[in-house]
Length: 346
Ligand code: SF4
Image 1 (cartoon, rainbow, N blue to C red):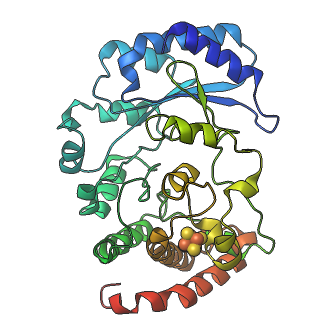
Image 2 (cartoon, rainbow, N blue to C red; image 1 turned 180 degrees about the horizontal axis):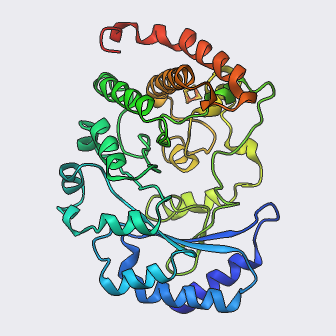
């Protein structure tokens, strides 16, 4: 992206902030954003000069391999208004396997000390899955309290394959044990589902993400896209033209009526509208090949909350305890029988 295009994009953002948003996150994604460190600095300078009274923060996800001393001192000086998120896939072995032997190039302490509350982003490959629990635990043991991105549903896996279902059970078990023991840690987004939402009396039809409204992606030529997934890298021009006819303001466009009306765990079953569109050519209809895995993960999320509650009744705010206990009971009743054949390893 040229500097001029970047400035025009920034101007568009500040002229179009949705009324229900209090601030802006300007996020750079790649490949590896730090390849364009000089450009990023210029855009940061431009934005601060042009919009001194607006509320915003800059963010970039990096693999850390290019971060040299000059960059580190710049980021240290700007750490309050520019956050670098680290992509780290787990143990050195997993990370090196996924990311071309680059583990030793990362100054992990720099990330931990500069942004102590920032989680790391973990990408899951088939190789990572074989050691999933150890990868998550390794990252926590490095000193990161939070892991942002254990998103099992990002990758190209066939989650209906029993091999994955059976293979993941020991990892979920191990992670639950770990998070019960270390109850000061933030639970990763996979097991940290807020299951009491399943007890909501009047379910609202909500979007899962800010696609097309709170999230806007600018392509290198400045073209606006609804999100970083819905771009020419994933969709054809005809599909993109069709997608742009969507009313992104209408949450109902993104709701699978079957799931909404019939599935107890609908409020905590994450979905990516872009990924739906890729498979089903519609934003609403969910890919049901993931259902078994979603149910299994929710069962373990319920188990974790039950055990944390027993250990420390304050682990759930008082006004959510009753609905959390109800949700734990119902999730077990509804979904445990489906996994009866794995009872010896669960
Ligand atoms: S588990 Fe399956 S049926 Fe239930 S909400 Fe998720 S996608 Fe829909």
